[in-house]
Structures are given as C-alpha cells and as structure tokens.
Amino acid sequence: MTTDGCVFCRIAARELDASVVLESATVLAFLDADPVTPGHVLVVPRAHLPTLADLDEDIAAEMFLVARSVAGALRQSSLRCDGVNLFYADGEAAFQEVLHSHLHVFPRFEGDGFTIEAGWGSNPQRSELDAHAAEIRAALEGGP
Image 1 (tube, one colour):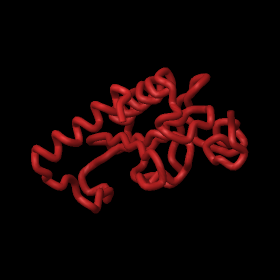
Image 2 (cartoon, one colour):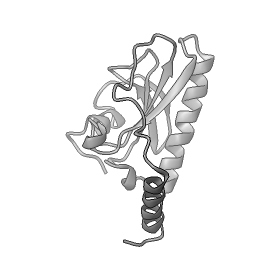
Image 3 (cartoon, one colour):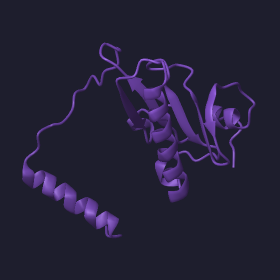
Image 4 (cartoon, helix red, strand yellow):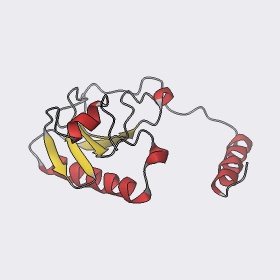
C-alpha cells in the first residue's frame, strides 16, 4: 500500500530521486536529504506503514538488520564516523515529521553539532519506576 502524498512512498516507487544505499523487496535505505551528519541514512519500509505499531515483526526486524549493516558500512567507509546513532520517532509528539515509519542511522563524531537539547532523565523515585514497570507489564500481558 502506498499513499500518493507521502514523500517516502514516492521515493520507494522511484517517483522522486534518492541516493539509495541498500534495498530489498520490503525495505529501502537511502541518504537523508537534510542530514544530521554526512552519511545520514534513512531505513524505510516500501509499504506505507505510518507508525511502529504498523510494522509486522518481519519488517521491523529487517529494518533493524539493514540499519545494523549500514552502521557497519559507515564505520568502514571514508566518512567520518566515530560512533553511530539509531533514531526512530513514533508519532508527531516524538518529532516524527514524515508519517511513514523510518529509522535514522547517522554517523557521529566529536564536535558534529548534534545535540539532544532537553537533556536526559528526570531522576524519579524507585517507587515511581516500579509503578511504571507494572503498568507496562500489564499492557504487555493484554491487561488494562
């Protein structure tokens, strides 16, 4: 299934140009047109699957395996790459700008300019962590 207005569907259908690095029958990996760093790759399903929940296990696994291969290739390439970030935004609140599942793979190096401005962590009490864990376990088990 494709959506005509979706830029990633149009890339997968070869209606728009992209610098493809790897492709299969179900997944396409290509350079981001607005990269965080040189070599920034997007791994997308060919089918229009907007959210993480829309991915079946096989496609999700293939996306991660492709990302892993791309990360290894980045480290072996002549591009500057001292580390690699994988980033998946699921939903607009998580800064998903294109509503088609995509996994970012981008090389990192000291001074590359990429930051996570809000910082990390809020140092909750163990009781709050335990309560959250219980809620997530219940949801995994099909509970409320």
